Length: 355
Image (cartoon, rainbow, N blue to C red; front, side, top):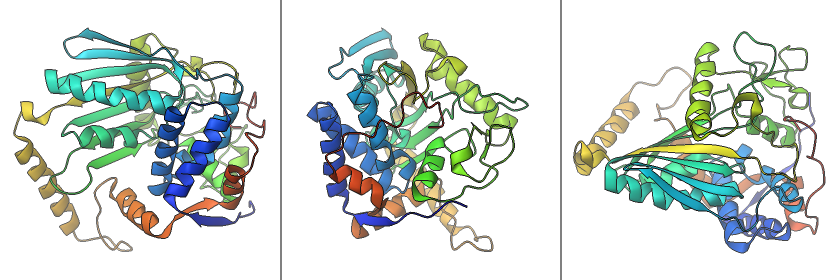
């Protein structure tokens, strides 16, 4: 049993400002720092604390040690009628990935269907953030990204693939878009990192220790488990092919670790596959169908122990509304760090994937 740690509530704008200031103190230019801070606060607002402020100390350490190109030479190349790449020169992942959004929207509006690969970037955070922006432009998108080799493949005893998330976004007639974001593991590593930061145990179905045995201690995790066994294993392979291998980037256990060689770029890749629904129907009809689906789901009789059926991703919207009103719960020691003069704690370098 781990020791629970105190959490405090903080206003979302204050959190954004604190994160931005900390990242700038680590060397990140203001525009990139603001975009990254906005992204991390978005994650915390959604209740996805694994991709929020808990990550700042790591980002600051990598930035300070030279593992991120502070002023990258970003190169956009259209490789076909509906295909393109955006080479980020190992710049800050959130900033580079967000720059790709305008290109994705423009390309898809021109061609109807597009595939854009974002290459040579650092960790890009929560894919839902990007999917929501694309959906707000009236487009449907599927996003995928590589991550560290920290998952035991089905039937194996050594790590090979990453958590390799998949996310989806679709526009709505009313309200925020339908957005769904999932790791291809039972839980993302960030969820375990969040549990560690709060002193919480984890379910024994999430991960294994160095001996391959199930563990409830987030500090003893040595490998994550794929969701639904061989099915999650297959999905993470698909992600690695479409987000990395197809762009001639490192793949599988050749993907660099988040916590190794903090003075070097990570050369990660991710991809948007985006569709304009107006090439097949009208946007009005499509979004009307989305609203009908949501109404149908809300009307389904809930199972015992549930008050309502929600569409996938809806709970994050509800959590955001609550946190905008009441403030975001963040571990006190993270807030103390953000307010301090300390740039980073020199705690992540060369500690392996599970630092």
